[in-house]
Image (cartoon, rainbow, N blue to C red; front, side):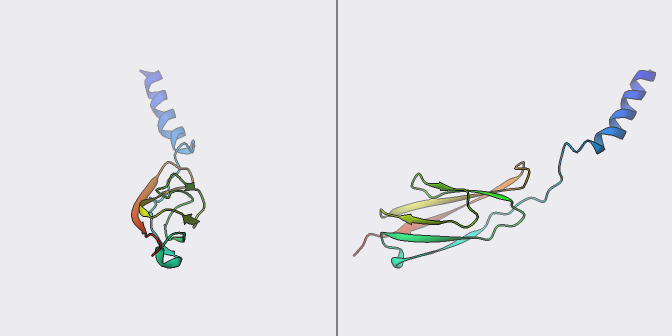
Length: 109
């Protein structure tokens, strides 16, 4: 019985000081974009990251291209409808949030 009590005391006194979990605010993913050439090919799109409580980012542009920059610039060379995906991570990368927006690139007239 004494060994069990000693174990409980150790768990409740030592565990809070081990630093095994970092209490971080949950991130919120947010972004907007602007495009050159009236969104006609070739179109260079500037993505403005407005995420909060985030430390690292993963972008997928819908054309097999990716980026880890906070606010990247990407050029589309083919017309189409692209799902642009942003995942925003906390510093520990244990928490994340994501957002998908649709981007339409038109063919040149």
